[in-house]
Amino acid sequence: MSASGSSRGEHIVAEFDTENVEKGLFHQAKEGKITMVLAFDDSEHSFYALEWTLNHFYSPATGGGMGFQLVIVHAKRAMAAANVSGPGTSAEEVLQDAEMDQRKLAARTVEKARAVCSAHSVEAVVEIMEGDAKHVLMEAVAKHHADILILGSHGYNSVQRAFMGSVSDHMAHHAQCSVMIVKRPKPQKGTKKQTH
Image (cartoon, rainbow, N blue to C red):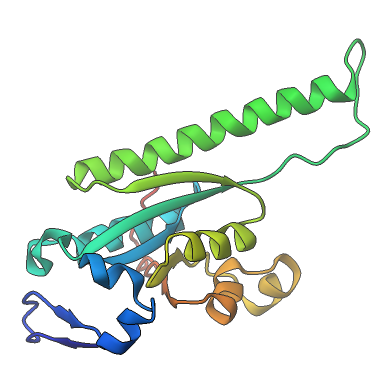
């Protein structure tokens, strides 16, 4: 795949190898759109990645995003069965309450993403998928035949990545499409950090 355009930010036109398109590669190229899957949680890093994507791919300089389809995916953790109960409640009731709380949180999270898209006049497909973020994103990339996966970087250092794992690191090595990790610039000294 190659791109043409000037360095002044004019509309970039993607050219696809017709042999690969016929084989089913670059699936969305047949429909004339490049599919971007964006991982979204309630972190400031996800908000930044979404804003960055909207500002760069859906700006007037790129034709207002006419060549792109944005799919926003939120991974809702699956509730594991646990032997938890309190006075007058069963483990099943506790799990049902926790599941309901998880659903509400996921719904609020994707509504925030929809609001950001709406503010930019962008229509996006927004999905909540259940499971570990790494598996959910692999599934979403395959399901939507994504050309690119976009993730926000949490800025973990090597020790944090070793103990907590890094979704972006995992996806950069295992996703079946290109991966773009949007890193939030570090605030300059004396500048307040913007939060959502």
